Length: 287
Image (tube, rainbow, N blue to C red; front, top):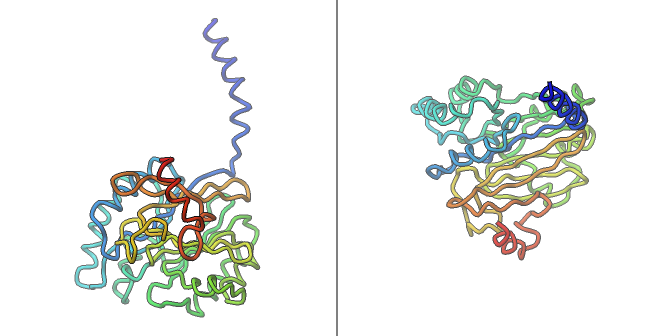
């Protein structure tokens, strides 16, 4: 009886803690490119580290296979499927990259193996995600912008919104602080908090009128140019916590030997790397 009394008291004590955890709080992971000269073992390590976060789901900015060869594309998707098998408990939402889709056949294979259309949207609790297709064009087509507007209008009541694509087709307009390009006007009109892309394998960030434009670091594709962390060249992933209407976005570098495990936020980064170049050394010392 005493044990039962203690157990009941413990449950009553924990009840306020349970009530304090709101149902509109969740986390998800964002992966950058796997390919574009994929580096052995990097993507697998990114998946392992991301799984430790126990996310509700994972968003990929694309380039999951190497391509662009119709003859071997299906075998590449099958090989990727084997890599992803241990992580299938986490739903994966993929944006089509230029290494994934380059022809009609490859577009069909993307849809077959991901189970996603070339552009689509989904909701998770109070958040809405629009995934756009710019796999075969440096810019968004008019058709994609028409789709985006219709999709955002149809989900206007969702309080949290993200736009995801492979190429950062917005990058020049964002860096030049141009508020008039179509995607940005729609993002502002419908309250989009973040626009996320991959493709360049470099961590970059621009805040344009309260919309965060984020270029993700590589999750497996080769590092370019200086290959320096402070310039945005490193292997990592994003962890996004959503609570009510608020989002907290962390950029997590992979642990040794593939990185130093440094953790930043998009606000630490600008359009040419770390805003505070001295922060790279401080982060190295703290991890």
